[in-house]
Image 1 (cartoon, helix red, strand yellow):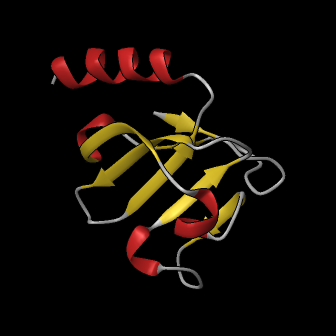
Image 2: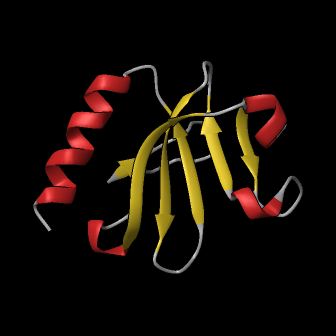
Length: 92
């Protein structure tokens, strides 16, 4: 899986599928859980939730990595994200 959030990431960030413990599409509260939209989380806001990268909306791909880090990536394409996760998770 790869993602990029300009202007913070000048190149794609890559997470290998074998590094992912769990991946789900979920509804979340951007303000309540992460303090708003943008590149959020980590050391300053609700550290237990992990990082969040989002622009708008309240649907995201929640990743829990095998190293116990968490990343939520916002999406406006819930159905497409669900189908992609099903495809890759079932092909382990």
